[in-house]
Length: 536
Image 1: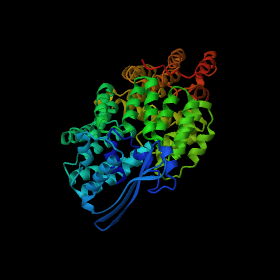
Image 2 (image 1 turned 135 degrees about the vertical axis):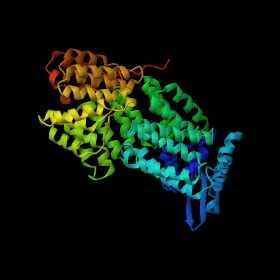
Image 3 (image 1 turned 30 degrees about the horizontal axis):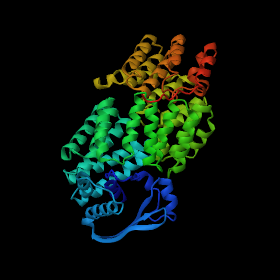
Image 4 (image 1 turned 30 degrees about the vertical axis):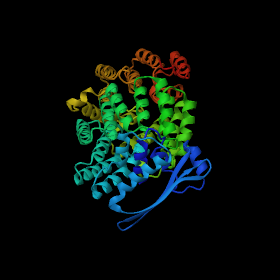
């Protein structure tokens, strides 16, 4: 009910409505509304309670001016469960009236809209949302939570084939699987597009449908103009959504527009001030600019406001590694995770990195050996085979099995479906495998093909990471001059999470060039942050 009322109110441009992820942290009747209002940046708070008994629902609500603790409106409702949408619409309308908000006709229609007439479909939709929200709050949980959400959204659609909101959520869930799981398959993309098209066909003005279509264009095809156009359509219906400016900021990051990137994430934090996600993305953006102190402040805020600080603690610790080369916070954050949990499994790549940077290659190999994910995605969304990480650890520990593992990685990369041949990370995997097998010409060819497929002009963030990976390939095959040239070229790029002064000193991959006089000079240069140039 909280989500539905917020969604209806959020579509009114005259109101500033704080997102679910911020409001969900509070009890229905918090003890000090003035503090809550200050934390959320609002003047008025809607609070209440809902009690369900059989098919009857009792609802108590009150709208309070938190500045002076005065009641602007209060009412109780006793209704049949089947009338719940009518109650939500009535509540939203009365809150808007109490706040003297002016609704244009299309806003009034959205407030009164009924998403489905099927109680069963709606119940399934709500169950799916709980899984989706958990995955959204901690993206390491995407591979475990979203498959459950997808099944439930599909069942909701089966129960009501006209349920446009469920179709949009289904399409969006497929795109989250594509981007974060990562499942970069054509099948996944096709499933997302089918569900999104269905949502927009059923309800052409559905903001959630256009938002999902924006993800399809952005995450699926890096078509930033098409994604931006869909986000602008979505913004008309979701005027208070923090997700829209957040996604526009993410696109600015991919386009290398640093000022717009930072401003966009800051705007999102105003709409969702008690959510860790906007602050997390702001922090990661500062880290990409090698502005690690600013990143630490934003990530510290994210850790402070989230209900479950585990994920943010790990992210902040990774920033400390890139900033100072200090592994202690990361070791402590990972040690706090409980083996056997989804969060523990979702951080497998981070455990590997800790062992790798600690030069405990046997432990790193065990992590890669025991995990079951096909690919691990890095901070720049480059997805490489888990077996490649295993091969790196085996080679570093002089395990004779390394050659066999590299051969397996090469086979995976070179026999990938035709549609995958345009993925830069597939060619990176092939290049690293060839380098491990002593096939220098193939390693160079595959690595350079990856850089051609994903230049920084196409993706400023992932493209910068590809440049750093290519420099690593050059080091592995003995082309040190090329490696130095590429690292030098990475200085002005959004590469802070891939390479920094601390990471250059810490990461064993750079050992072969560590004694070169150019290395110390380069490390000093990487201590400088990238300027945030004003938007034109």
